[in-house]
View 1 (cartoon, rainbow, N blue to C red):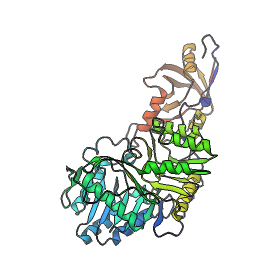
View 2 (view 1 turned 180 degrees about the horizontal axis):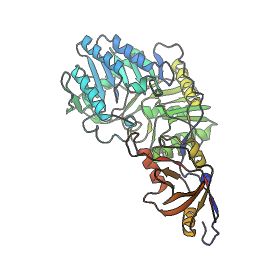
View 3 (view 1 turned 180 degrees about the vertical axis):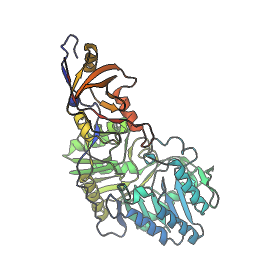
Length: 515
């Protein structure tokens, strides 16, 4: 407020806009996705979606049960009991022959996991227990610290490539909505062979940790060895693509096939471009990943560009990257359960993959796998899946929502609706009132109630004590945390942690000062 200006006698907190974008709840139709019959034996669409008869899990179990020689599997997490039982039966039936690559190592169990999507809500001890059971039952397990790929190969004849980890929340509709996933069952012999060779290279030349089958789960360091197979080239047309970046026993690698496919598909779009990712990381810092290619395409053509993305209000950088895409003109479809990734242009060119739009891990580095699907019938089904997921997405994105919008629709476990009506009568000393008015320039404006009611506005905290029905005495003090930091801390608190016992939310009220 300008110095010397008269202090207003009412303060509309609800009209104050937040300086950052947030995902807000929206009414969505919520209908299941109905898969169509397969029309192409070489590439068949597989998916998981809330309320739907999901096909990734069923396909994975059927492939494992049909194995006659060997199984190659890569997954960050493994936690579905029926799938585990199928693996145990297979290792008994094949007298071994089951090989698993994961990114888990003794070191990565405890560090460097915060940037990886799959650790949201993870139970480290439960995951170690599952790996212990895998090795005790005779499954060979190795760790590659950069592996984020999710694929399954059986008998070098068929492969399942998707965005889904092989765990229950990603595969079935249980007591909570199934995570949205997307992938392809690959039956093209040449492409399955290429992927099997890629797995073999990971197994021998890339994995730096191993657990001996038949014993208690205990990872130990291993020295990478030269791969017994020739490293396969990236697909020139429809087929398997990957990211493989790093140094191993076969030498340095900078294979960024997924990034190349992403840029190529964006460059081919003329009318419609569909994008999907779980997370956005480093989009503003590395504009060459996504912002620059999109800007060129959207300048050259009148494109309808849509992004399906997980609504991660708890990650400020994710929200800021989303806002940058929205500012560019991309229509944002936020969803609380999507984990699918892909890019499709005009229904003619496209790819599905395990990599996020991530400049730190996925597009430029790490190990990811996907499938390029230009001109294949399966691409139409993948497009239909993305369009359905966008239409039925349960979140919208607001670049600068007001406190009233945040009070009504903010996606947050801790959010409670403001309980005291739209207008609050308060009494306050001149200095306290002036401090509050001066602070109330930008959001968020938060409220919290336990033994008393408090408002957090910028760097001050206002305590309101009831003096009369519908009237409060207001005092203002310096807050140890500004409101934006406090809101981030609330998001960071785990449900059931015991740290979030008070009622909390965003304040939409008009404060009227009583004289």
